[in-house]
Amino acid sequence: MVFAQTIVEAPKYGAIRRTAAISAPSEPVPTTNTRSGSGGISVFHDNYRPGIGRFDRTDLASLDRRHLWHPFTQQQGWIDEDTPIIESGDRSTLIDSEGREYIDGISSLWCNVHGHRHPAIDIAIKDQLDKVAHSTMLGLTHAPAIELARRLVELAPDGLQRVFYSDSGSTAAEIALKMAFQYWQQQGGDAARRTRFIALRDAYHGDTIGSVSVGGIDLFHSMYRPLLFDTLKAEPGDAADMERLLSEHDGEVAAVIMEPLVQGAAGMIVHPAGYLRDVRELCDRHGAFLICDEVATGFGRTGRMFACEHEGVSPDFLCLAKGLTAGYLPLAATLTTERVYEGFLGRFEEFRTFFHGHTYTGNPLACAAALANLRVFEQQSTLELLQPKIELLGELLRGLRALPHVGEIRRRGFMCGIELEGFQPSARMGHQVTLEARRRGAIIRPLGDVVVLMPPLSIEEPELRRLIEITAASIEAATAAPVGARAPLAA
Image (cartoon, rainbow, N blue to C red; front, top):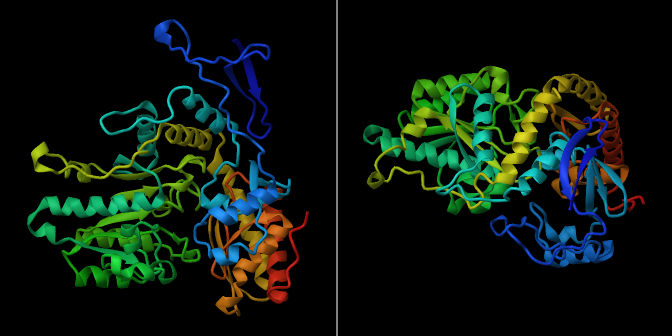
């Protein structure tokens, strides 16, 4: 065993030094595991590394069609498409098994922040692997979860002091709903009447049953209606309608849940200025909690760390996921106030415990990635460098307005939706545009006939220009060609 100092070469990020233990090429691979207690060092077999390259692209595509069930995908259509098999990534680029490169125009579903294979985050995860990959938080704790909680509280809007970890945006929202409901029940008396929730029309908060109950997109949610609890739906952006519902159900509403500023899955619906602040004031007036779901809008997507900051709003619950680990590992967090936390304190026999948890709650690897992500935000001045790119994106999008069939273009920060008009749903025009973009070297996604762009915050100006050029050309090609007359992917 020898020790060597290695330097990660990353011109964009700066070289990062780290000392690592490596085996000399001539040194035999250990075949036993010894532990420090017996005078050795902990070394495991090197013989069990998974095989690489066992299948070629044709084999993998066939196995995918035979065994996988993809999310939000009509599998009957999937098997007819020549879909890229992503093999690697580099900064804002994804590379498939045939070596073709694509700009990641949707941040790998709105979660990648600083680009793929950022050396600082890679190293943080590898360093944590040298310690422990996972340890439960039921009856135990660990440093990465503790340090991350402290850092999130420092960054979050005022008043949010407690952090509860989970593993996805859906569970982050579900936890907030359950906490709000249980809090009021434990208050007892008249407060126990607060069993209702208000959500926005066309809301999306995830796919677990509680989160679906406060959702409002019929395409996604109507099938499950018999399984859901009833919620009140307010008109997005209409403070008067929110006031009407809170007044009609005064004393019955546990919480209002909303995506602040932008409703992402609804097609990038942007709320009018002041709406979030108005909702906060209405919740205070009627004694209801405010849950802000920043799973999509958090970590710089709107131009600030959190969308709530734009209107100086502090919610009672803040739901985070996606960009929390910069798109590396599944991790979510629900932040809340000391008031809510104290409402769950009591003797064991009072059963005021919040009975909710996940096996991977506060996973150390994910927490290490999240801590590194937040350090990169600070060290590389990510939000400051983002501002001119937000301005550039606005300028570039203005050129798309003249394209035939382009209707409204909705945008806040780096969150953008381009609405296509004049097509029947069966034409799947949004999907056709994404296929054209793929042929030209970009990955984008549709929400119906709304083409969504949300690139990594780290995307460089030339890449951003190229992404919009590809999007424009793809819209022109898709809307001009008859459905079915599509060329295969270019080699």
